[in-house]
Image (cartoon, rainbow, N blue to C red; front, side, top):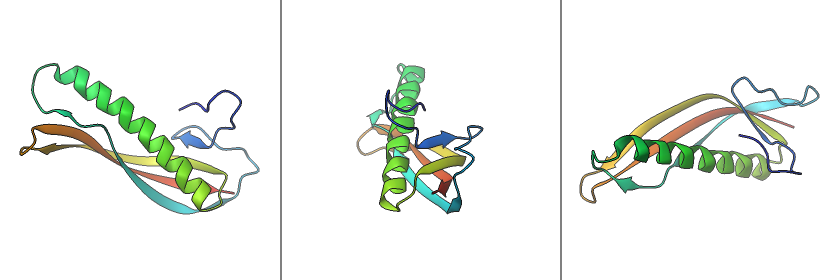
Length: 105
């Protein structure tokens, strides 16, 4: 996910590498949920795509929050686990992601 124009990149995904002068300080994990959508079979692919885009956006935001909170400079995500969730009582579905990353200073 690219940084906003004029903002330095904080989150690096999988094969992307942080600046060479960055010092790794530890491995951490953040979790995020996507928006909730109707859990029907109608437009299932569109809803899945919408949830995936939203989940990745929220995960990027959560990663930036953690880096800031822990006085870091960069995060490099090296593992992610994404799974669908469903609430039959409300008829909603969403994606839940767990992202493991190395934090750098």
